Length: 271
Ligand SMILES: NC(=O)C1=CN([C@@H]2O[C@H](COP(=O)(O)OP(=O)(O)OC[C@H]3O[C@@H](n4cnc5c(N)ncnc54)[C@H](O)[C@@H]3O)[C@@H](O)[C@H]2O)C=CC1
Ligand SMILES: O=C(O)[C@@H]1CCC=N1
Image (cartoon, rainbow, N blue to C red):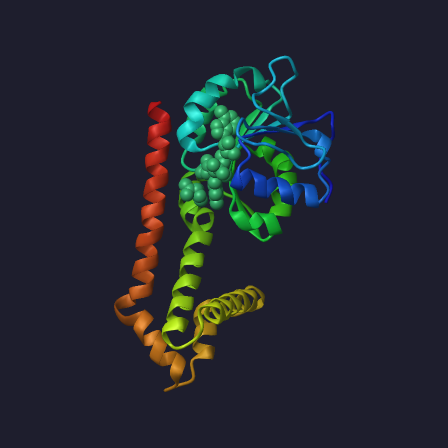
């Protein structure tokens, strides 16, 4: 992987907590020059080796080639005002914030070269995440260089799909973790010691996902392949499938998350 960033084409990360930190660790692991990176985060005590750490964006330096917004959506309106000097005509602004829409971002950074929304998820730290992207054609090559090492990089033309994707892939790991928890709790009820129950649930989900990722068949076909007629799996699937219970539950879960993204967008527009 070749990054287009070197020390003369800096990348500033405004807010580098859980999510931006996971992205940065993957970028550094895959060869990004740490000297090209500045973290601006008043609450961080340290940065990875070679990465510059500042409490506030410098006002006496040329704006960076790329400025990544990794702060919480609720703090964006106040932070945007502090960033006026950090965004220039050659700056591509990349926002990973849930909700906050392109219109709000371009309103705040009218002088930017381009504004791109990138919706990541935490497994990007392993290069097994998702980067859902929306932005102008002109910025795609530059941003793709950063998105590709994260895992699946998927561009969408309709910005509404970023909010939908925030629910599916952005929040998705939490929903899967809840399922693993539920499976472990169920295993305990069936007699396993707590630690064994967790290992069993995790190994089952990890193996099943890895197999599905490599398989030509859909998950529905794979489920049927596990289920012998009249066997144990069918008995279990009958519970999940009754009144489409599992589909209904997951649909309502994703809808609630997507609705919240829309609310966050509205709050950022009003501010
Ligand atoms: N956590 C996740 O799995 C995902 C998070 N996101 C988005 O990423 C963004 C960050 O989320 P997290 O990393 O989970 O939150 P976080 O709380 O871990 O990170 C936010 C960071 O912003 C910093 N910050 C606060 N005020 C600041 C300021 N004035 N200037 C610079 N930095 C400041 C905080 O110190 C913190 O390190 C959010 O907008 C969220 O919607 C998107 C996809 C997944
Ligand atoms: O919960 C949130 O709002 C963020 C966005 C997607 C995952 N975490």
